[in-house]
Image (cartoon, rainbow, N blue to C red):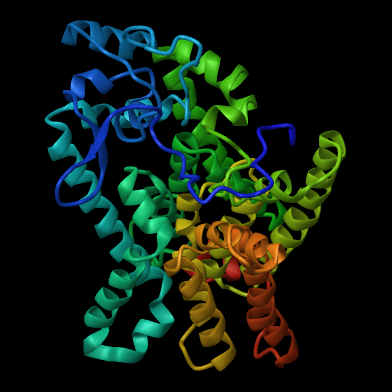
Length: 434
């Protein structure tokens, strides 16, 4: 799996993030979402979210009825203009069903609506993740929340998510709401695990929470989440059998379908190795698998420990970081999880170590560190400096895991317990129960 296209040794400052193929594009005024100079009906294909908002190929259509039929049959409307390039299934086919409403109305209207949704979800995510810090400001809580959300918009992952019309804001908000929401005793609540299951059916990354729940022995939550994802995926397979069969048997096993895996935008462990590993690709693959086991094992141990300590927001941060690192491909906009990570590092803002760690990570996200490193490779600085910065998001993700352990687990272990930690569900507060 490390045999994918390599980046030139010299580094190319003109390298660009994954973009929608060789199509003439422009920015929709007001929010920066890229679009083609073509009617929205030309963008309909076998995967609505991928084709409409993260356009990967050129399709054209002469008849709206043909478009509807193509969506229903999971087939492209007309062959791509570049027949040698097979169509990309970026998300599971369930995303096509979820995204069908996006085909209604003009591209500009849909783009505005999607951008507003991302900003609202960023606000909600900040409110949930930064709760300990916000609680210090009393009546000014809303103002501080707005300031933090505004700062979040300026980070590279959030900006890229808006630019490409991505779903990361939705995925992170769903997972955070599922794992960390607080429900009063006797209040109506959705069974924990449902939202993560829906998120995993749209994008596979949240399935990392299934591993966490297995390690943490939250079997009921695991069963509900897996059952939810399996249920909607089965319904999708009945409605879109061709696309479902192709995604789960072919596209899923081909990470190259997403773009050049060795490019700077891929900030997973595998992406780092593709850029720096000088040896045989086969040995590189073995090394990657070893790193996946080590990072995954340590990360899920940490998330289970945080679960027992009653730190659900930290659980979301850790599981999100582990998913980013062990995935074959983690583009820079996938690092939307770092909104939650910064909140966990900051805590209530009273520990200078946490404030410093949150500041460093935020600065890297604002400075577009990987692309800054790519530019350094063309300069006079030693190459190791540029290469380190180029892989900065992945390296900072590993450092953040270590810092979360140090700030939360190590501190808890050194303090006397006022009450025993338990894994008995009935002994937990309602908002923590699976």
